[in-house]
Length: 212
Image (cartoon, rainbow, N blue to C red; front, side, top):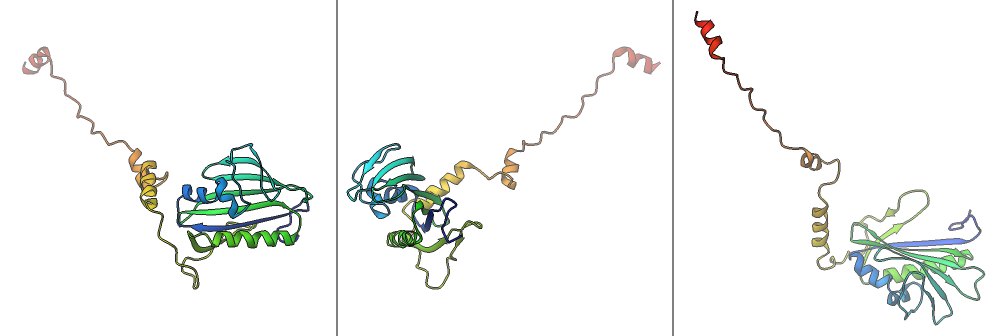
């Protein structure tokens, strides 16, 4: 099967990049209506789940799923297209801050797939927060990330202001991870020393018998 070919005869495409920002900033840049121009098309209307929007280039959009700041799924249609296409944005946690993942389904041919991949790659790498680390996604296994110290990779920008502090506070609030020594120790109650049994005083009658 050709690269990106699906069982129904269409094509799919996906590209990811890591960014040294928080999820809210990434969502504002890619998931809001003003950010669609980066990867879908210029949009002036507010995005709400279930909404149907028409772009100036003739693309009709239906907002299938919207979960800020994590996921945006859109159904795209044009009169010239033989079938509808689905595109999706996901904002995922990463070692740098977040990974912005773009994915498309229902593409008609390999050339359209390559063109879309090139356009999305340029859009991601032209964003000022790009960290320089490529993330390759395949069906065979987990994503393969370019090593941070690879020669020629761009130097990651400074973290978004307050991102590291918020992340540390979030981890502290969640407490130790399950299975760690700290978590086990935290759940164990303090040992309570048992008091020594109290000896009962012998009755006066018993004492009298012992003295006889």
